[in-house]
Length: 126
Image 1 (cartoon, helix red, strand yellow):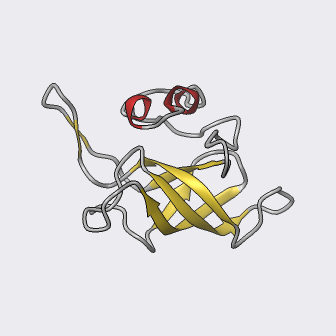
Image 2 (image 1 turned 30 degrees about the vertical axis):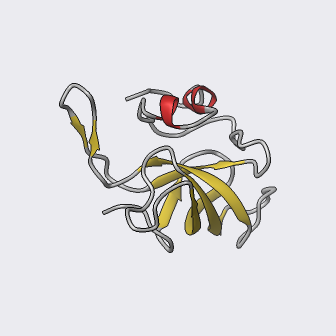
């Protein structure tokens, strides 16, 4: 199952949000949906208290995990457990957070402009 509008994501950085819902997909087909490395406009659904971001804020996010199979060049298939995003600044597309809680796939390096900066937040690169 791909990522479409109204899909719910878990936010895996330390920005303060925990759940987000997709409002718009940038640079992807509406028919096929978004994949790893796509940029979304999301609405924040659950936010921890005393943070800069608030509930129902519209922010840009980067898809870092999907339930879809991720095919690699050597014939390997990477299957991840859930849909997850990292929040970005709306103008610069740099990550809002300083740390990421879970491992990230290596495909972000090539599919996103600031991919190396996002991968530097992760504890492990898959």
